[in-house]
Length: 340
Image 1 (tube, rainbow, N blue to C red):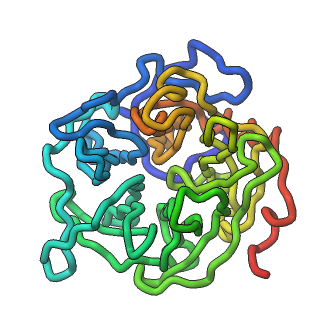
Image 2 (image 1 turned 45 degrees about the vertical axis):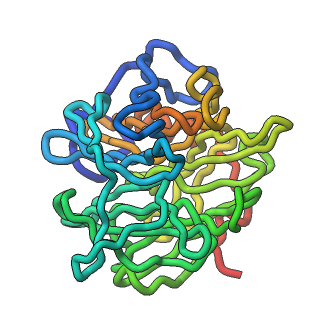
């Protein structure tokens, strides 16, 4: 039993591998058989990465960023019995509007997936006369209904919290620009109906730590715990050979998640293995989802690697929470309510 409690469902059949190769620092270890999704995974798809998965019945389902062989990214549906070995639909997800009419985005990438009450919500980055956030909902993973775009361009990295807070839906996002953004902080917004969004608050920005000194952005959907919302996010630094994406960790206040309680000064995972360092975009570890078990406290982290593969890493809520708290450095912009 964990001393830190995950608030949520039990997933006794979640993927798990005990740590056999301790890392140099954080208690997060890679799956020994990584990458779990390699190149050319299905017909007319060259690469799958930066994708989100979720328990579904006695198995698992996911929405996957698939770079088609024509270079256009779309979202494909995948299914798995063990959340490691995946099969994918041959056709991209077909979105419709509220009237049931076809309503496809120009392109779609970096999806997240979360269940709130009896509905599954998907968020992704798309074109809305500039980079912006797209959303859809489903109850059966057969019909995907587009929702209103929550924000104006330019914005990316949308992540919904897995429950309403004070009666409202709550979303993290990272306002940006139209290009490969060289800046960015994480903000939070609320909505009573997933149409009208407001109460925008700053959560946290880049720091002076080398691995996140350029920009940061949301990652996996926050995990509700007895310590607060456990957030795995990405931090970016610039080098003479391009950007490097690492995975960081923070704990947000449970009722006021614009307030950062703890923020780890060290990365939890950074590119070190061949499939993270070498690929279409080298030196990327980009978290998009977790599967976690409330009974054991186990956490599986799914991350995109080098914009080419999907990797899997593991930790426990006790170990990662203790590490974040032990190495926490917060600043005024982190701990304030986020209004100026």
